[in-house]
Amino acid sequence: MSVDVVALFAARGGARYEEAVTQLEHALQCAALARRERADDEVVLAALLHDIGHLVRRTPDAPEGHHGHEGASLLHPWVPARVAWLVEHHVVAKRYLCTVNPSYTGRLSPASVRSLAAQGAVLDLEQRLALETQPWFGDAVRIRRWDDDAKVIDAVTPPLVAYRELIERWLGPQSWRSGRGIG
Ligand code: FE
Ligand code: FE
Image (cartoon, rainbow, N blue to C red; front, side, top):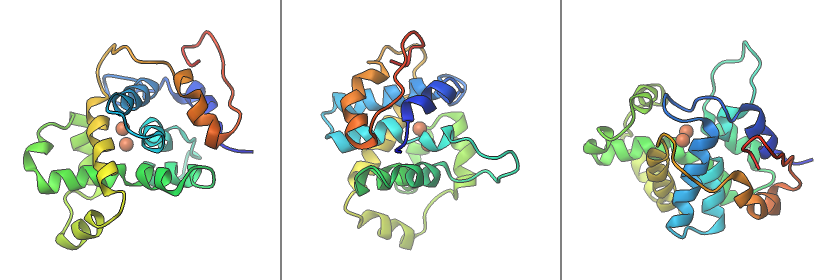
């Protein structure tokens, strides 16, 4: 058994990501931006699934976790290490960009500013250097920028099925459905 991300999007992808778009819309916009910039398949998959941790159902009394960690631990048995790392680190990439470029903070959506404090706000020098020396650091920053731009109301994007080959290559057979905007 692997991870049925299509079923996850079908069940919970209609939830609001922020005020503007749903989780599924946000994921599709982020992946479309990655493809438009000719990112490789691993980065496109990470862009598509970066917030999958938000779709994992928690038990009602479980504490709110870190959705990057939750997404990465769900995916990591199946996907290349780089994909899981990028999913995990899209949150710290936001903190990094706020640290090195204060004007970036002004570009964040209101919900993203609110969550920043809970995620730990800016990085200290040691944390910053630790991140900058990671081999996939540049990919994490690229995904973060697409993430920020993937919140456009009523944007037209390719549907989830456009990523079918990519998803099934690593995650195996999925529950594709028709008529729900998911396929
Ligand atoms: Fe996120
Ligand atoms: Fe996101």
